[in-house]
Image (cartoon, rainbow, N blue to C red; front, side):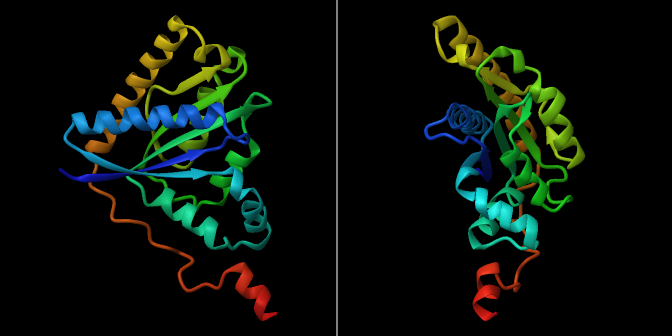
Length: 205
């Protein structure tokens, strides 16, 4: 049984958040689906909220600090990526977009990606298709056909929960099929290896 690495990017800003809740549901279902296909999995979660300042510094300096470098390495070195964002102004959050802005444009080529989004109302249910999917198409990742959107009402009531569970099972099954069909990732090549961190540069100034 081979072991696959899953990176989970959660763009939620509150703690706790429905974004992280959906990310956890997608992760658990993916791990179960991989086991059904004879694959084991290790999971690394990247919460973007603690990296907000790190990302802003990276945008203006061009260099990630040690914490952000680790987060980037986790994502680009994974066999599969689960990416979940809250919806702001009918699109992904600025924090979510900034993280993917600082990745090397070729670092996710061919990587299977499961897309998820959360919002307070079902009016935003097309955000996965009109905002997230084009982003990952630009990065030449392979987004699974079924994205998962969860509005506030999807967490309440047996019927709504059952419908959400069905979408999760369908999407994670597609995701597991993509991951199981790929060679095991060799791990990321750190393009910043040997480069001093921003903190080290300041100390030497």
